[in-house]
Figure (cartoon, rainbow, N blue to C red):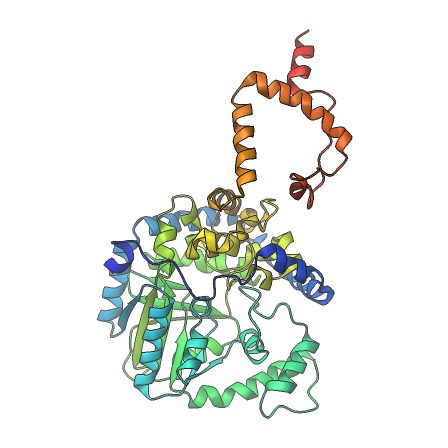
Length: 472
């Protein structure tokens, strides 16, 4: 464990670095009218459903405060809690592995699957395995990964990438899904319609044989309880329950921030997560397991604890809030930027507001420098977050760390100097009145600022002028 918390850990690698900047990718997404319609319909539906069930709880804000406090306490005691989790899992018959980065995690999982002799694994929807690019690593080793979550299956069959934390195929409508099934799903009925129950039945038939014949499963974990060594996965379809109970071997990849101290802490998050994510009072399937139980479920259990940049995030007193995230996606569903651009524009497995603060920290801000600017700073994400992550604060913090052009640095230094000298500041206020003759755009080299916003009209008088006239 000293590899993680006793020395600087390597920055994260995997599916976290964008191939192009957010502005360029967003510009392309904004030209896709179908994508915008799909996103608007889906996010509006989820928002409304979530809002109704949250309104049923008179103590919702108290639950949010409790969730935030538990997460802050966990981050403050992370080394000892991880050691306790390892001890309890091992005592219950499991094997714990420590992975400093994506490459190490992929090697561990691939070697474990090879040791079983299996050439196929069934997978539960997992952000951690997407983050490290596990599917690609398994395929390169000659092992077939099969996603069993319906939305993840759609993405996999469509040779696509997820665009939402909770609903990976949110950018697809049902007609597009039918076309993917007809083109990619073996044995599908050629007369398949786009009726949702019919599509779900086709996926069920496709997966049933796979569930019964595959001996190895790979999962993530929503929570890990240090007190008992218990892992938990929550889901809505029952595919996770099948993966957790039928195979002989279960391999769980869990980010180190997912640990919780006690069972009592879990109670808070099992109230927060379903309401904020799917708009349900409780998750339809909440599965928990502790190590190995002879004769019941997988008889070989491995837990891979993943750092992949998280230790570096923990070292930042402001940015570490991002590690509180419980992957509910509430911030995506209220974000005006996400609703218009979709998840692919973020160039990371973590899209939306949380991706804009988490991905740059996991990789180093310089590798995703445009993401902290993928926000209007409206604050809707903070209001929606069930654990009160102050995403706007982190965005501003990361913008300060991002590399800036020399001209911008010089301009900001000049502004700081002016504001630090009252006489200069007063003169600048009066000079600013002349900007009314510039219209809504500034000339080069300042034109970049007004390329995406109008120059505000100057007030008729400054605050100092108003104050002086008021005294008279």
